[in-house]
Image (cartoon, rainbow, N blue to C red; front, side, top):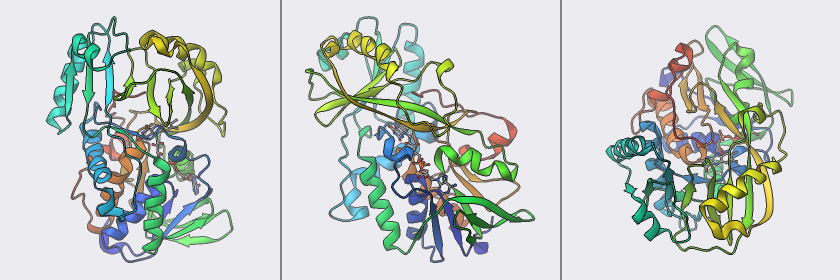
Length: 390
Ligand SMILES: Cc1cc2nc3c(=O)[nH]c(=O)nc-3n(C[C@H](O)[C@H](O)[C@H](O)COP(=O)(O)OP(=O)(O)OC[C@H]3O[C@@H](n4cnc5c(N)ncnc54)[C@H](O)[C@@H]3O)c2cc1C
């Protein structure tokens, strides 16, 4: 895809991925028309609005660590980027991953790789765990890994608002309509047909439709393995408090972190209760029956717990390898993917936006190389597996 060919860009999906792509294109100097198609401008069901909005450098795939570091730099320096009033309530309180007996070598190897990529990860033995996190029961936990820098949580809605407003101010057009069909000529996408009956011509089309991305490109004969999977989040109160409470990923598979004056947490449903979600956003309340005892096992004072509410959103799961798909399709090479982040996409959107903008405006990745996330691995069935997923 030659950058000189690009005069009009259409982005399908106007949440965090689509908006970062649009905003970054303007920052990269692209002055032509950019149209963002968004079928629901309330973002009520977007993964972005329903996410747990946390950021970590503890990934198993090096490129994911680099993308997180890119975002953490931006979050710390947010006002320089988005202006003096910018605030996404970034809390750099770290992630604590707990390892079970037998996992020590894997955890140490992961931390070594993460450090080599620039992440600041400590390996903690049981005595250090107990000293730092009083109130936790670390029985049966021989190892923990903790990232005090570049890890924590933020407000995803505020981030979306900032980047969307920034894009809007820079002349990006957001259109309230669903993309319903693609028009092609030879090996090019030439336009997108909308739910309003209109048609938007394009020289480049970016697919940032989140969990719907796989279904969106199916009529083009493209087998993008991105499907919606429902994930439930519980918001609750307990009397337990700890100033340095981090985001915790337990050996049992549950996660918990502070949110406001309480906590949020969740767990994956068992595989036999995890079908592709078809417009279903009903929380899986029954998961609390499993979640609660596991939580109380790790933090006994959380035995006293009151659920305030629960919600469910859709992970955009790349069933091949749980990693994002970024870059052009091979046959239709003006169709660019920015999707499939499998539950870790809010934190990676700033880097994806930058990379996609560079690719479109210069024909190559410059500041962050996302080649490993390219279409080739999907086409060839060569997974780049992200092993640290929740
Ligand atoms: C419960 C939960 C917890 C999560 N926790 C985290 C976390 O802690 N950290 C993290 O980084 N990520 C997390 N994620 C994942 C993260 O939310 C997603 O990876 C990210 O939001 C993906 O952004 P997106 O813009 O690609 O998708 P979305 O936010 O889903 O946006 C896609 C947009 O495309 C629009 N759209 C779809 N089809 C069309 C069409 N045909 N035409 C026009 N518009 C269309 C939709 O309306 C939507 O607004 C979590 C997700 C969930 C559900």
